[in-house]
Image (cartoon, rainbow, N blue to C red; front, side, top):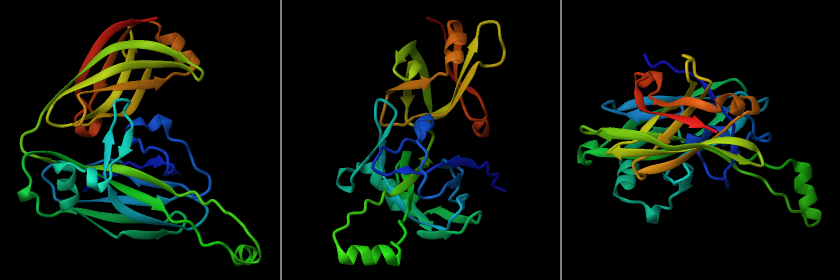
Length: 279
């Protein structure tokens, strides 16, 4: 039985970059209602079918259009849109085998809905990792009749933001492996406060994904944890920036151990580790 741990993901303006791997930077939206998605990452690793559960925790009914899109990770860890004509062989391969239904849902408040996911035609894919992203985009409500009258009697411009979120769908075929390394850890100060910055390198033929744990020397429990850190196969190295609360920044100065761990669902093993002194 599939065990689902709901993670709240608030919708954000679609004109901005979608960055699931940088969950600390997602800004909440107030207009479209909140959408819960579980799980927030799907891996097809030998299985051909699964599901995603949506739940509207807003106060009003919301309608969402569901589609497959392509995103590529940049050196700063953010995901940028890939136009169909710019897709490479593996991106087109993912689009060609992923099936899903339904493609549009209307969710009353606190009413869950399952989106079924499956694969078809994977025997034509070569070994490797393939990825597309499932986009849930809110459909703006029709203007009220009084607004329509106002538009008919005079010039009126109404800007309606479109909201959406994406989750990655990853297909793995064959014997794949990857290693990672943490380099150049340091503290950075910007107008928002202090940030823990480092480079996260990846080698191999699949992505790496997990959480960062920073532990002070002589202590067993981490002083900070940052989840949802990925490096996708299109990159060998990405930069990671983790904002720190003032008390965190103060406590992390000095000798620390920075570890990169698999998620508990993947076994929780150590992927990479470095010991350093932060100043």
